[in-house]
Amino acid sequence: MTDLPTTANGKALKFRMLAEKRVSTAINVIRRIGNLSRNGSYEYSPEQVKKIFGVLRREIDEAESKFAPQEKKSKPSSVFQLD
Image (cartoon, rainbow, N blue to C red; front, side, top):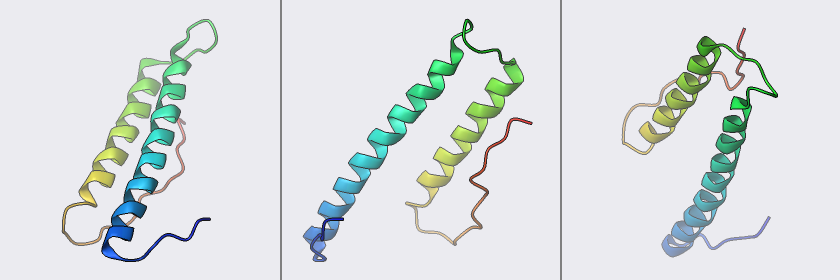
């Protein structure tokens, strides 16, 4: 891991570097989830699709809320199961 400066500018640079990497990774993973829509390769129900995108939206909302000043909330489980 690279040592990054801890000054105010260093913290902004560290945030930018990590955010760009993590968001790019998230975009790629979300696109891979979209690949599951191939009917010839997979079988799924509308309820499963609804559950997948519901949990993704909830996690996006939770992540976004962490950027607003507020009380800390308990962390929900990071394990996802359709059944």
